[in-house]
Length: 336
Image (cartoon, rainbow, N blue to C red; front, side, top):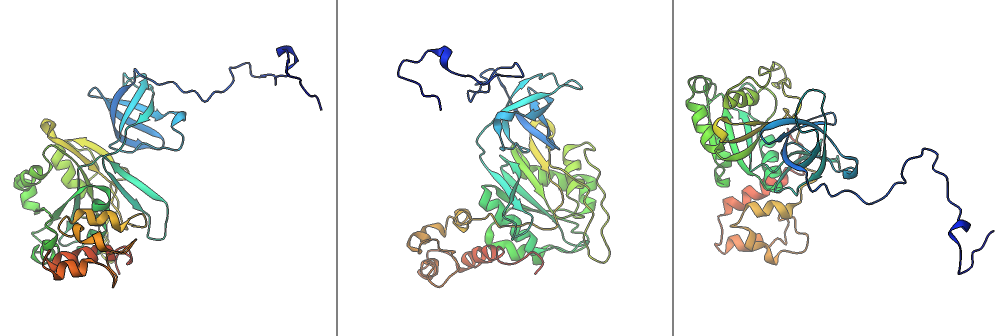
């Protein structure tokens, strides 16, 4: 084994030859200070569409981002060809911190969480009052995901011409969630769209719902152009529809009034990733009562301090019931 003294000459140091003739790899990465800012509109098999200065630009993720993935709604920094012309490709070199995140897992046993939308202000949970029948467990799970991710929920109930909304609205009355009820006739004459637009004005709203509830039909009517295939077949036996939206897509509302994000129809909404300590933030009237809770309290156990807090008159018992009903959805599979 060759040993070197204190005064070695550079010529004595052996170097591994670079057979490819290129520069050696380095951990130093460019800062890309001249990168343009944009918003991710679509993601399709590693290719992303980014809105840069009002025009769509095709891009891919830069290697230096590693496993960090960009999703619809992300604010990103882009370099390269930003013309948006055919067969051009830019690179996403930075992803800005997210203000909110809508996440889900395939089921409650799946530890791998999927980010559906980033930086949305609210989550519109679309459900039909009939054909297919409403699924309250599914709605509960979407609400938990919204509260956990920092989004304000909005209930959009469709097909009120087939069934009244009163029973379903009563179930969520204590949560103080805004809602809009629509019928097919009102969608055709525009009165329902006006009510929905009031709730969307100036916001980024993600639309979620299981297939067949009319979610994409509503989104297309809101953006005033045929962006998606709309009609999905509803199975007469299961009462469930066929997916007509296969990937999330951000669409601008007319007059720069905001954005809607149409997401694929879901048959399940796993909550493996949800932390009960974050859901409680959506109940400001109950949150102070958790100060005396035991460590890692689930807020649905005998030692929970919320029982005493409510008994002392600090909050409505119905609100505590609603919180625990939502948290319990993490332990129940949708449809149980």
